Length: 283
Image (cartoon, rainbow, N blue to C red; front, side, top):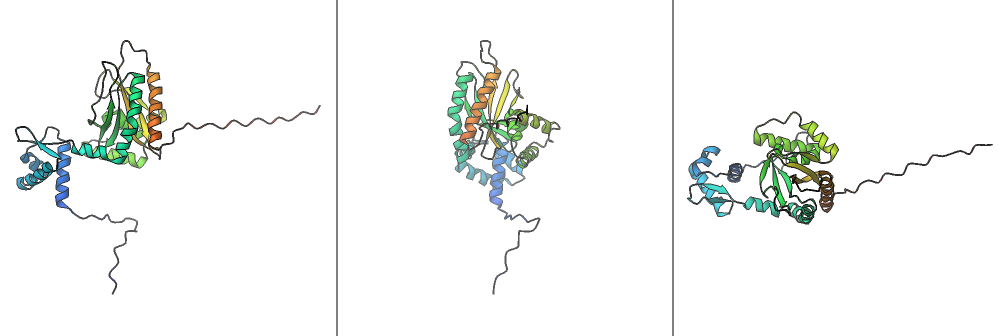
């Protein structure tokens, strides 16, 4: 006798297959909670925030500490997240390859512009800085590698959103709204359209007075942005490099990195205009 065939999932509204895994979900809840609480937490604070018992949370914390995801403070009263998750993200092949390809180009860009530069990607409702190169000058401004910035407070975030497909863009915005409990900015669509038309963003920093962020997208083979290359421009009194020269250098650097990631960024050559046909007048 033949067994019953599995339930068809080809209907217009297929059911999502979901198998509850309480222990895994509990561990992920803890990691996500610590990721949003840099000051760390005690066992009782974690239990209260997740509405769990002290005993089950304590066992999970011991396991995560043993695996290197959590560590205890010096006085052993609080736990905090280690850099293990960040290192795992760095080891992800596409990310690792992009950083490997980008760093030599970023070092050359810093030498040309005499400014620092960094490479950022969208992660949930934030922008995470994957790579950073200092200015060769003795003074400058830089963003620390591994730091996280609210998606809507980062030029990098806007540039990536502006150069993604509509579906990817909406998913990122929804994730940001879910994490921050905020509504989408009313002028966001218009802002992204202007960035898309210009091809890059140049605006005053959302966080630091006197810094102008100039950001270009890094594109993949589908023409969608996977990262943003940013120079946090600081004007020096002795500077003889104009912002327009910096923008030109960044455009070329972002093209080189995008090409390395499989994008086709060569400018299209316009076909020559057809010559007008002339008819010989009869004398």
